[in-house]
Image (cartoon, rainbow, N blue to C red; front, side, top):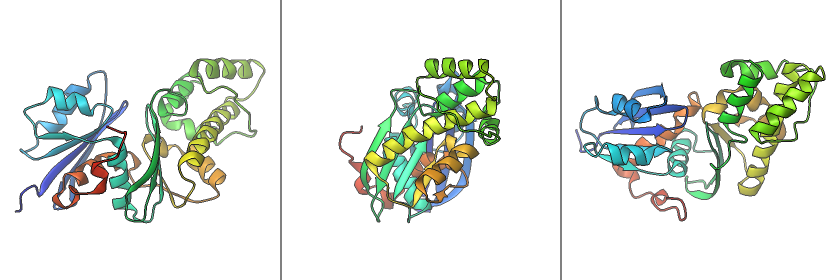
Length: 268
């Protein structure tokens, strides 16, 4: 077996942690666990049982494992690098990658050979992210996993003016006090996120095919509204929240190490 035939990629997000292990480029193991309030313990549980193989970490917690688990062979890369690699590997035809995760939104424009042409990342505000959806689902007393399907039951499109979680909750409460159906309010909240996302797409790339990744890609209402607004079908990976971990693992493969994504200026 050649050196580095086995390699692991781990994506440490705000809501979940994903692990992908590759052997000679093929996925031999994949796991997903909740981040919980102790992400380091969750990472230890995933990584320490692995054999002594290269581990590539990405996500908001990548520096945590780099610092706290020095006994492991860990390299850290950015989420932009990881998602570009993972998306291009799965769907080489994709030209725009949209990732909406628990606490950030990313748009990446890809060239035909998978290089990053341009990107934008919003990680300073919960508006438009999975955290916003989680907060509003709780406010409407709907399980997060059912929130998208619940919004699709709406019979009217409402406009939600604020994307601040506090003001949006207040606006939703006012609408309910006026007798608006909860499903209509849920749809309005999804529409507000879509409008914010479209603004990011316009700034970075409006070139199809569009690949939708991240945990929010499981949300049926978001998928439907984005496809409707873009007037294009979306590419949805079978496991949209595993794209980053897959990309991280691909980075650790010997043939990937020289890739131009190694040096994306301004995003370390």
